[in-house]
Image: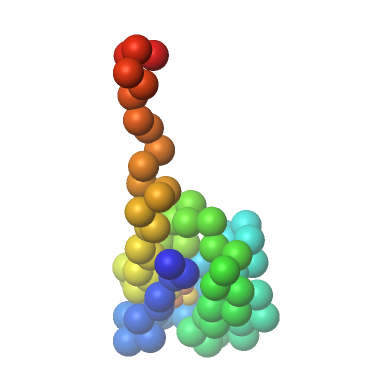
Length: 76
Ligand code: SF4
């Protein structure tokens, strides 16, 4: 799921815009709450969540991305 920004918490610092390698917030105006312009480009690396000083961003990781490890029947 793409990032969701709480406009009441966001101090409009732009750090999430700067950290995003996929330009999900492309075209956001400086000094404004960033716009999630390309939600489908989000790769969920959570940089924006960690960078946000106001904890204004919620990012729900899709279930398939949580299943990164499954042991094989041989234990390898
Ligand atoms: S990093 Fe957080 S406070 Fe700064 S613009 Fe993004 S959502 Fe707003």
